[in-house]
Image 1 (cartoon, rainbow, N blue to C red):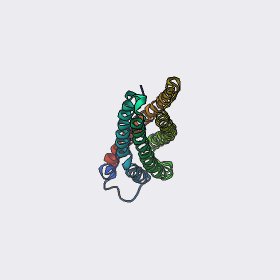
Image 2 (image 1 turned 180 degrees about the vertical axis):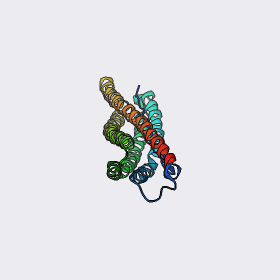
Image 3 (image 1 turned 180 degrees about the horizontal axis):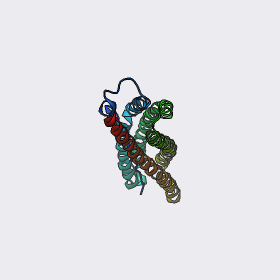
Image 4 (image 1 turned 90 degrees about the horizontal axis):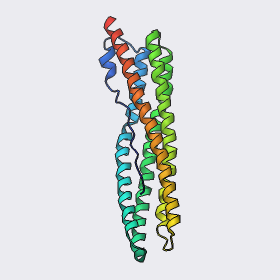
Length: 222
């Protein structure tokens, strides 16, 4: 059985938090600047969640096509070839959407420099500690995504090799079994990296909330 699954979480939206937490403070504090940068980071990642749904839709489509190919006898090679072509076209579309997703993350990552610079200017010891923790998990999350992207690229290529091989009339069972094993091994790595990415996303959101809570408490005292 060909195993395909890729489900990762987008970061929490940040827009509007500046008004909520530090309204009336006057001027742009380092915390305001950090928040602004993280809001831009989130906005530039907006297409990420959309691409997740699209990629999964193509995965499901290919899974159905693969099942039909396996169930079709060798005597109907033209049918198998047609199904394979459809699966290859779907995989090509996945490549395009994967690139869009990666571009979105790369644009988001460009705001990291501003986030780190602003965090470094914080004077309040507790706020700075929480800000530094937030930055650490932003960096870990981006690194995890980069690894997830690489593994998914490899898995997608293995899918394409599998679809192409199914066109062969003389494809031996052992060869198919070997290719299927390679595909499943690749997606096992994808799931592993996806889980790591999701964990960092959850931890990042927890650290963000702790940072915002601390800032909110200080804004009430000022």
